[in-house]
Image 1: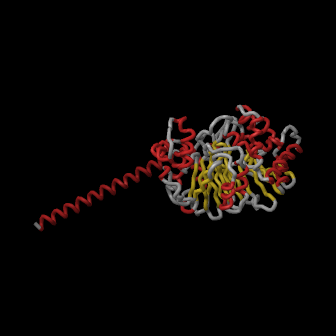
Image 2 (image 1 turned 180 degrees about the vertical axis):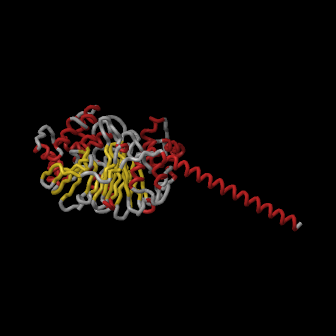
Length: 465
């Protein structure tokens, strides 16, 4: 009996050993298959050229303001009071401002698409009431600058429209917002970057067929008594949707479809610029929290000094702030957070925002729900949406390997997978610790999406002093 028991135990041990070996082999095989698939995917990636040493030329001066050519990009550096900076901007970029307002983007994006000037200016006036006085002083300076350059047909109302146009274009008259296949942002640091510094990447996917790229300018402000900052912008604008400051603050925006919208609030371009005037992450986030907001926007706001970043979801009704590894970003809404990284695309992660969309617009897509419990049952359809796929893909790429997201990898993430878009107006990678921006702007004639063009290194150290 004892011999049989020992034999049985040896047999069982042998069986379990073989079973463990098979499991380990299957695990190794599965890992190899996954790694092979990942390798195969990356082998097909497009790698945009990075121009590390562009030629820098001084083109013109106006007072303390200077206009440079850095590679193919115009860089307008303004200095002084807000009125003085506006005048420098208006005088140095008068031809570009005239083009964008009279032949280019205003005409093709607004007036030729059914917007009337009466409608646009009326909505613009509602937002102008919320613009801080020092920015209005700058707008007056731009107007005076273009007038001084002989562009007498440009009005002050047109200059102000340059600050409010984003909201107007997001809400065509009598039409609801749509869920765009556009705009992605990510910021990572700590375990994901080679030296732990913050790297912030962003695609502005809007349109490359309305000629905005013809009048693209990198604007650098050096206001008296404040630290300098920059934005990837356009001639005549007093703000934009992408920027970085000498204080290490970075910011990028994405459209967030929401029924909670109004024109009675601070325009997006101004909100983002005001955030860049802050010294730290908490205060920059505080600007957005304070608002008041006009529409639905997602933000990624970073601070290279800490380093850290926040993702934000806002509309005219609510503001939510997410840290990295935030428990609010959870499986309850079919999302997942990451330590030392945040990313966003074009949909809400919070359940109230998702429910608002379903209640307001669900019937247009055959979705009929009355509460969160009902919505939760059909939430898996979200995974079929381009916005979710970009969000998910970015998370998987960032966490694939520690210390792997450098400038080269960040540029590649913007140019591949579902994040790639054929309507990217501009794309950037910000490196706030080193005060460097890698910028690509869409081409024209024929239109070419930004991530299929070279990224130019813009060294901001001299202008950020």
